Image 1 (tube, rainbow, N blue to C red):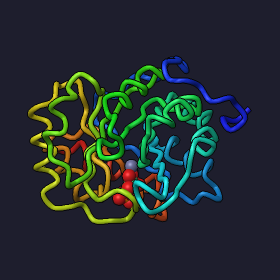
Image 2: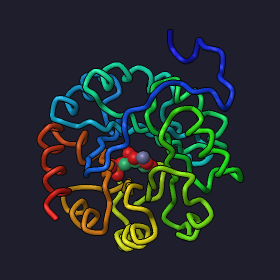
Image 3: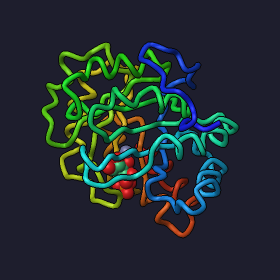
Length: 242
Ligand code: DX5
Ligand code: ZN
């Protein structure tokens, strides 16, 4: 049974036990850049290459202009990721994400990141993610003041720092993003990883790592390559070189 056939859950239900949040450096291939006509194979390729965090970009046509994928596609890769002892990392680029947390938890998300810009109820949204049994990510757009985290310390488990403007894969890393990562690193507890998302490639992964990033989302630099397994390995090497 897929998530579309289930009655919606209410906030406060626990969907299950999530995989542990990785504390070491991990490259997280983003399926946004995959060939959707053979999504299972593409995910399997990077799992076989050693990837354990698979990033899922959900866009609603409101918070960001494009519409991408939802809970049904997320659920379709859940078994593969689980079988590899992997971690399903869902990034909600949608308005009022709190309304959709339960369906993504049900679809197998281990973590769900919600944007501070997407709801007047960010604390509630983060709370809903945790109550659904998932690790809660606070996502910040490039133009959002870093002080947005000030009143939310303790309410999230990792910080997703956008290093491009959300909505499209294949953009260039915004110069200076590494300074934002470093500034965030200096105010966040050491067990709260920073995930960089957008424009991560073999050139930008090193500076991001040096600034304190722990999770490296990579879409086009992995799936845009003729050889995603080698591209993944190259990124891991770049992220671990510093
Ligand atoms: C952008 C998404 C990213 C995207 C990154 O809105 O949040 O996760 O997949 O793609 P690349 O790695 O191509 O910049
Ligand atoms: Zn993303």
